[in-house]
Image (cartoon, rainbow, N blue to C red; front, side):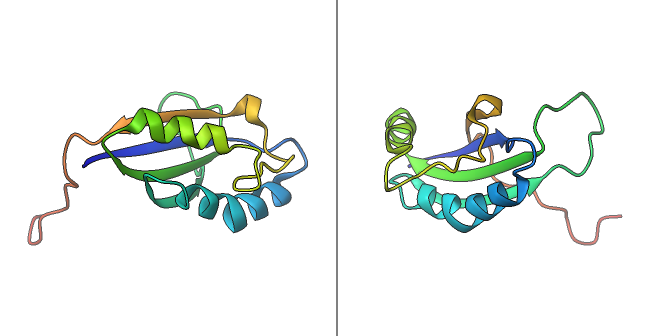
Length: 115
């Protein structure tokens, strides 16, 4: 089975951050993980930018395991705005980017005793 990371860069509409956070963390991550092909989900909030520029303050990273990633993504988008995956009105879809990356290597960890 192939492994992927789906990265979702997102923003709430101005003044609706609390509603956006409550929905995304309290509902949306679980909704995505209930779909076939998705294994885990985690959210992040931008701390700083060291190089380049960013357009989004929020990032969600989803782990996918599938041999048909195109179908998993198509199914996810087909579920959008259904009872299985409602989208909160605070979520600014026009300011959202969704990217899928296929795993090339395993995780590299620090070597103990190095230094």
